[in-house]
Amino acid sequence: MKIGFLGSSPFALPTLDALKREHELVMIVTQPDRPAGRGTRSTPTPVAQWAAEHAPEAELFKPERIGEHEAIERLLLSGADAWVVIAYGQKLPRALYRRVFMINLHASLLPRWRGAAPINAAILAGDTQTGNCVITIAEKMDAGEVLASTRRTIEPDITAGELHDLLASDGPPPILQTLEDFQSGSLRPVTQDESLVTHAPKISRDDAWVDFTQSADACRRRINALSPRPGVSIPDGDQPLKLLKAAPGDRPASAPSGTLLDASAGLIACGEGTLRLVEVQPAGKRPMAWGDFARGRRLAEGHTFMSTPR
Image 1 (cartoon, one colour):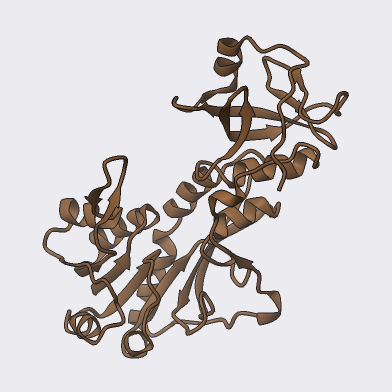
Image 2 (image 1 turned 90 degrees about the vertical axis):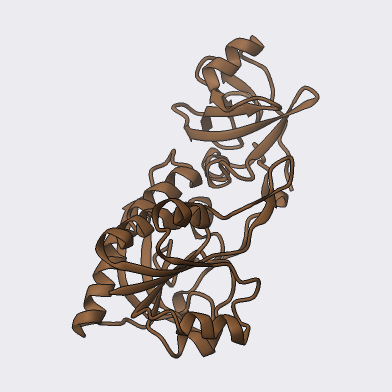
């Protein structure tokens, strides 16, 4: 089939690779180049970079506003038989999705975690299962009918960044199967149960805190859910220390919250139970294993890290 694609995030890249192999990509639509990095140099999206390297034959389109008449007409004239949407970043106009077959890959088990940050929300809430859903486009965000899905277990020490990559790698099979079902006329859409809807709002720097007086489970989930971005930070002397990965502790707390119980293992006392710091990032340095950080700082049992409660 001739496929049109809308997306901007690295989450889309494994599926783009599969679409390139199995179908003909005729148009790739992505966000315009934006300033990025310390030099604020205009930078293309990861999807635009992929298109330039892997699919130069496809028309690359970067509209400022996808809802404008000229943009809609350009997509409709592309000759695509179907459209795939993955983390595009703009609301799609009804005048477009009502006239073409268009599907979206969303990183949650809908109707749970509609919205911008489903991966972060699933870890933060302590979900043990997540996955991907392929859905139709609807007026309400992520409210379309479910056409296919995948499942994956959320391990206790997995970060949002790690889960993002795993779910991205799970994306191609349900997308390819849905396109095959569309072509054969065998789609079986399932309406979402509105009574089970939960929402996953965008994560911001205001969320980048941890309170060690909370339970170890809550602290661990918060650290992992916000890693690598924006990353939970705590004071370390006069510099922030970013906590990038935590795992469950192996013994009860025996000291005030925030106390380092085992320097080599990164075992921290919380309000209830303990957690183990696995990976951190000191200010101005690269991410490193906890053990390397602790040896460099010569930390000992009894050292106390302050919480940053909100």
